Amino acid sequence: MAPHTDDITLTELDLPQDLIRLFRSFGTLSKAEKTSVQNLMKDYTDQLANHPEARISRAAPSGNPSSGSLPQKDRLETKLSALQSLFAPIRRLPPEILVEIFRNYLSPVLDHPTIQLSPTPRTLGSICSFWRTTTLSSPILWTHVSILGEGDSYMEPDVTARHAEGARLWMDRLGQLPWSLSIQLDLHASSQGPSRVPLADVLRHPATTRLRELGVIADAPVTGVEGQTFPALESLLVRWRQTNHHMYSLESVFPIVPKLKKLVVVNVITLNSFTDKLPWSNLTHLFIEGTTFRKWRMIIGLCTSLQEGCFSIEDPSHHIQEIMSSGEPITPAVLPHLTRLTFLNRPPLQEDFRELSFPALEEFNIVHGSSGLDEWTFPPTLHAFQDIRRLTIAGKTEVDLPTTIFHLLEATHSLLELRLDINCDVDQLFKFLMYDHSKVRLGLLENLDVSFTVPSSPDSSTPPLLILREMLRSRSPEAARRSGSVPVLQSVAIRLRDPPVLLCDIEAACRQMGFLNGEVNIEMERPSVPISSITLPRDSLGGYKHWDDGLTDFLLPNGSLL
Image (cartoon, rainbow, N blue to C red; front, side):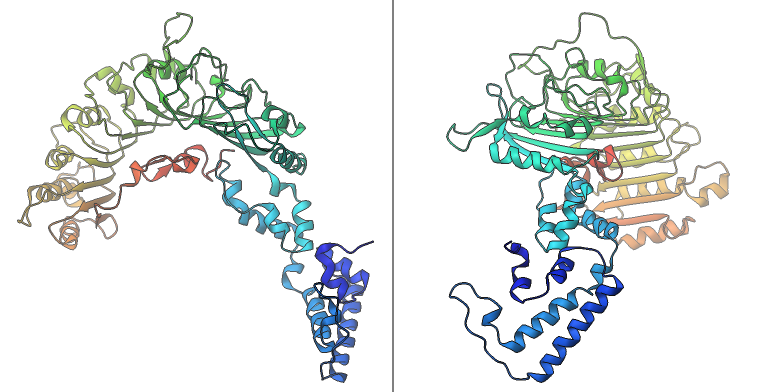
């Protein structure tokens, strides 16, 4: 039988077949095998000692160099080097440790199922024979499958026949493990090209019954999985890259997913609780970008198991009718498990939240876009957030504090942590944050994180910095010692853009107020660096950022959709 292509060098060196078998296996050498290899190495060493001069053997056929073209001394040294590799430290690693190393190498792909990166199990398998054996026998390394295809509103999504066969072979290696699948669909190109296979045919593989997470990114309003059933799916991402599709049908683009727990939907303008028969009441994590307030209100009322939600509310689209339900009114809803709520773009706090209740809500995040903030002057809505403990508000557009944020802060009586990265009148902000015994306002505040730009002035004692010092003094250990009932800030982070004074002067003043080193952190923030909360979304899941957090963290701490 012809030698394996990866072993051709070993065969040409005339090594015994039982040794070639050792090179192909990953197992450590037995005592008898070690003795045999060591004896052979001693024999080759002795031959080298007896043949110090190079002797050229007969030339090999042109174009196919072999061991015969090597000097005798070089052949012996090559054999010794090959045999020594059998004692390499990496071969002493237990297979499960090597597989874990491989997993760590592949983690950018395994942990971010919608990102296309270069490391694959095939890369590892091409290094040497026993690495190939290890990768092929380790289903855990094959638990993410990526399919690139084409699809639009008029033609069924498909993939090239070669890609389809590769995907099937990949799924064959999964064993019985749960796995993830990412599908990326571009618009159909020219009809000329390699033969193609319907995507639906590829998804009939038996492994789809164990599919745990699915991500679909498409240019056209399709997913390629419409109506398919995935009985074990727990996490689903659907993103349309464009938002201006003219829709002629309200048929659902979602698969049948009875066990779904986490759902991310971006730009799917047909999203509708009436037409999309998703298990809304089972969802624990929900992200929606690109829906109207009416649709959001209908959907959120059904998500009674929701723990974390992140939403971007937009105006109704003229491309599709605002069909909500069969005409039944929206009923009051209680979300007893919701602990974290985030609004992106335009938070709808000017709308009526009286029929919504979030009794367990602890963290509320607002990241507003170029439209800024509408007036929040509807007390029943603001009272829905009165028990939150942590509040983050970020955005580049200038904010009118008295008509927006101040109303919300007045309504939040239990706030412990406040983080602000906004463009506003800083005089107003620090005056509002100053502790006043006559007002029940932020009486429990412990942690403050504020980023702002100091108005340009040649005077080093600009009013905003004076007010900042007075605000800190009003919530300092020194003030608490004087009056005994002042809420003392436990940690303060102030980020100044182009400060007109030395930062150490402000920190020194804070120490005089009784703050310990580390409790107050004053630092300079360069305006050329974009604030982290306004990072624009990219095609990949990891591109969504709000404050110092990301959408991948919103789904799970390790950044995975699973």
